[in-house]
Every structure is written in structure tokens, then in C-alpha cells.
Amino acid sequence: MPSFTYTPIVAKAHTPPYKIHKYFARRPHNVFNQLIENFTSPGEVILDPFCGGGVTIYEAVIQKRRVIGCDLNPLSIFIVRNMIKKSEEISDLEDCFKELRSYLESLTKDYMFFELDKQRYDLSWAEMALTIKCPKCGRLSTLTNDLKIKNGKYHCLNKYCELNKEGEIDIALCERAEPQYISLVSAANKKRIIKLYKEDDRIRFKAHMFFLKKEIIANNINIPRDLIPMDWDRQFEDGLAKKGILYFQDFFTKRNLMILLLLKNKINSFKDKLGTEKYELVRIMFSNILKDCNIMSFTNAGWQSGSPTTWSKHAYWIPNQFCEVSIIPAFDKSVARVLASINYNNSIDYTPVKTSSIDDLLNNKANVLLYNAPVGHTDIPENSIDAIITDPPYGSNVQYLELSHFWYPWNQDLYDRYPIFEIEAVANRKKGFNGAKSQYDYEDNLHEVFKNAYRVLKPMRYLSLTFNNKDICSWLALLFSIFKAGFTYDNMYFQDGVKNYRQTAHTKAKGSPYGDFIYTFRKVANNPVKIYKDEEDFIHDIDNIFLQKIDCNDKNRNEVILQMFADAIPLIDAFAKTYLRANGTHHLYTHFNKKYLAKLYDSENEDE
Image (tube, rainbow, N blue to C red):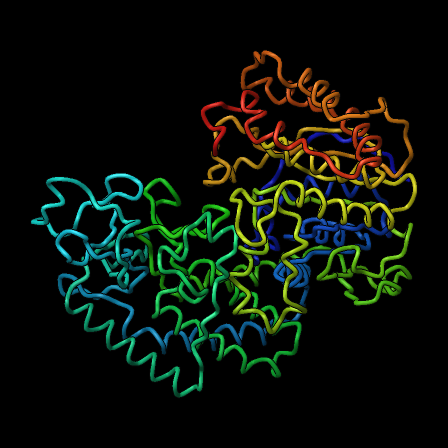
């Protein structure tokens, strides 16, 4: 059995296969590559019970391991099975992409432009704004950046409105109207030309909409209306219904929605010609376009040189001023990413052999098996796995299924099943709505996964995972679930993050150590360091470790945290294997709340 002596390495940026489609919170590939190399030998079997963005799966396959990936999320399985693909002959795929681009041009070239000073410019994107009816003057007022006073408060667009003199518009109380075009932007050849939206542009837009509607009817396409559930965490966090976003199709402007529906319809005509494997590559190209062409896209002078960016948060965040991004540039970028992934994979010596049979994988007839299901819903035998390497969900950090459902209306024909939201291992920050999950639910759902992971892992072998969360509730829930399952703690390391990816809205929180803690556990029995008979005793012991005066600067903060966690873990193991096994439940998350570790990170940001 390989020995494990991990030394933190410099995390590298994603390679082309990881850029084939957006996924949330992927880990550095070379870190997992090293974990695989240390934990296993070529030919051995690795399980990732939360395979997500596919890092463990991809790195295992290229290192000549056999690998099993499980995930409730059908988007995860769709992405992973395409990112591992190789194809020596892609001329038919390239021909398909060329034909699709020509079709897109036929849908847009006569309309997606503007004229300024007798010059014609191709439209790169349009600046648009959500619109409300002013409660004072009754006129429509756009929620543009120049009218913004502060979050939720705006001036009225009507400069004569009395409200501009005596107060401000509270947009939460206003009647909503159709979004309005503000300006048109051409960014060809890195030279940015901007024109305010005028009457000639409005006439051209109306003509384009008329043309697209005729094409929709001619192709017998029904415009779907897939309702966004009202009892979702993201509904409460992001206020979608309050902004008039009721259906998944509302994430797109009416123009882009029709163009995308027509493009997907055209793609479907290639299904028989290309065959399943290459047809899915075309579909994943299309699916990845969706992230760039929705109304979550916005511009900021300090981000990506002022070009549109989207999904800057793990949320359905709709900026009041947003972009309608032209689809052809997004199409070109997505095509390039698919081709780059294939070419990159072709340069590596590996052969992906997928199967749907656990017997085939265990008998070395295949090296990749993907389940759109949790481990407990699979037929993986006991004691058959050589190592478990994973990146579990981080409490309430990312609502994977809710966010991934953005793609469901477009990709459902490619998915095995509708996701089972009830058993997803996440927690919700907002409470009191139907289906809301507490930290206790998060712990229970994690435990169900790790209990079955323990069952299928061979004795003495390793579970390794990455985890980093400022909320001690999530950390305790993870460790309780692992120790209750039977695992024994082995070691812990801090892995620094990828410098290139530190400037996203989700990772800018001050005081947060950017990177991951890598934990290793083994399937061996141990004797708990203490027998706990009540919760108060455990609280006292953990408080003695964490609630002390902290005097550390940015250079040694991670070392201080690492030592505190290392001191606490044996006690957490003991509590899980004595008190929790005897009593089944606990009530610790009132005391160990999200503010508990604030002084370790940054008290000014403890509510983020």
C-alpha cells in the first residue's frame, strides 16, 4: 500500500478540460493529482462520493487508476463524462461548429449592430437595466448605475420628479416594468465604441424580434416556462421573484432566449450524424454558452478589463444594470474550449473506458464508472475501494443543486434523472421555509454518505478530503459525520490556493485563509482519547482551545489555526464515537455558531 507523506505544493490554474463547462468551487487539479499519486498505485480503484467538477475523476484516469464518481447533480455527471473524452478525428465536429456559426450569423447579422457617425459597428453587448415605476411621478425609471444612491435606493430618471429633491426611491416597494436598453457597445479589436440607445436602434430591435418570432413559429418551437421553486434557499437569498424572475427562462433577455432556442433546435439536427459521443460535446458547448448570455452578466471597470462577466458569486445575483451579451462571441469562446479540451487530452497517454457496470470496473474491463446517485444508492461492494479522495460540500457555502438547475431546462434530455434535493448535503442560511435544511440536516446527509463510503473502502486504506469553512458548525458537522461512520483521523495540512483565482467576489472576504485544509483519515479502529457523557463537557474542552486570546498576523495565522484544529480533532473524534453513538443526536450548533471563530479570521467580516 502506498505511504502518504504530503508536502503542500503550489496550486496551479485549471487546464483546458476543466474549462469545458462552468462548475462551482473546483479544487486545484495538481493538488488532487498529488493526493492520487500518494494514496494509490496504478490500476487501483478510487472513489469520489462528491465528484462535482470532476477533478478526482479526471486526474485519476490520466494517472492510470480506475475511478468511480458519485454525485446527486446530473450536471456534474454530464460535465465529467465529456471532460475526459479524447477524439483523434474531429473534422466532423469542426464542420458542425462551422455550420452552427453560420446559422447564428443568419439569425443576427442583419440586426446585431449599430451605427454611429456614419460607421457601422458589430454589437458586442448591450447595457440594460431593470426598470420600476416611480411611486411619486408615475414614470418608468431605469435602475442604472448613475442613478444609484446606495443598495436598494435610487434617484428617479425624471429629473423633475419631486422625489429627487425630497428623498429617494426604495425599489423594494416599487412596481416592476420591462427592462430597458441603455447603451450599445462594440468591443472589436479591443477598441470600445459606445452609443446611447436611440430610436433607430429601437426600430432595429423590434424588427429583429419580429424576425426571431417568425423563425420560432416556422421551426415549431414552444417557448418553455419552467417555474423557479419559491421554497428554494436561493429564492430567499437572491430575491428572484421580487425582481420579476419567476421562470428559468427569465434569466435571459427575450431576444437571447429565442436565439438560444433556435440554436439548440439546430444542434439537435446533428444528433444522428455525429453519434452520441460527439453530439454531447456539441451540447456541452451549447450548455456552457448559457453562463455568458444571461442577465447575471455585468460590467465593472475593475473586473476583466471592463468586459462582461457573470456568475461572480455562488448565487443567482441579478445586477440592476446588466448586459445582453451577443451570442456569437460566446459561441466562439465555448467552441474553442471544447476543441482545446480534446486536443489537450489527445496529447496525454491515457484511454478513458466508461462503463455502467461495477463488475466491469472491478474486473479491469473499464476505468471510469459514474453514478448520478449517492454511494448508498449504488451497487459498489463492501471493501472494494482502494482510496476515497473527495471535496465535500461546504455547509451553506454553495447550493449546488439549486444553482445547477439553471441548466436543467436546457439539458434535461441528457440527464439520467431529476435530482433528489432532499438528500443533498448542504445547509441553508435562511430558515423557516418549506424544505429548509439546518446544520443538523447537513450533518445527517453527510453521515449517510460517509457511512457508505466507509463500508466500501478496504480496511487500512485512506479517505482524503479538502475542506475550508469559517463556520465552525460546518466543520464540526463534517467531522462528526466522518467519525460516526467509523473513520480514524490521520493528519491535516494546509494547501494554499491558486493566485489567479483569488479575485472573485466569493473569495475576497478579508481574513479568510485562501486555500484548503487537507484532511486524511483511515479505515482503522482507534480508542477515543476521552469518554463524553454530556455536551457541556465537550463544549468546555473545545472552548479551552479556541476561545483564547489570539495574537497572530497574516503570516502565521494559518499555522495557529492549524494547531488549534489539530488539538481539537481528537476530542471531536471522541465525542462522536462515545456520546453521539450512545445518544444519536446533539444540540451543539447554538453554541458553536457562525460567529464562534470570528476572531480567528476577521471580526469585521464575520457576517459575510
